Image (tube, rainbow, N blue to C red):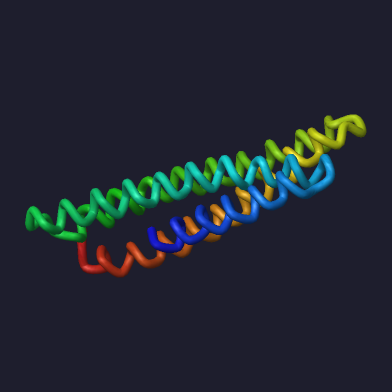
Length: 132
């Protein structure tokens, strides 16, 4: 979750700079980075808090990791749909720079998120290796 929080924070900072100072395509990429980064950071903070609270209550880590690993598998499917959706938007943009920028921004987020989800799933699998 710390990786997702770092990505969300970096995405928001880079997105704000691109939105403020870029041309139309770069501004739209920046807007996507800003919004997706805020969502990613909020999800990471919520996940970290929930895990900390569960551990404080004495809950075992393995069931939490197993549940989160299933969520990550679903997220990987969503990530591929983000990439496909961004590609579709670029192809249908008909020379509209704003739509091209939105499509590129969505694809960037999808690519990074699929990598993060795969890494998190690998980390969570360490906690469930000996579980049924």
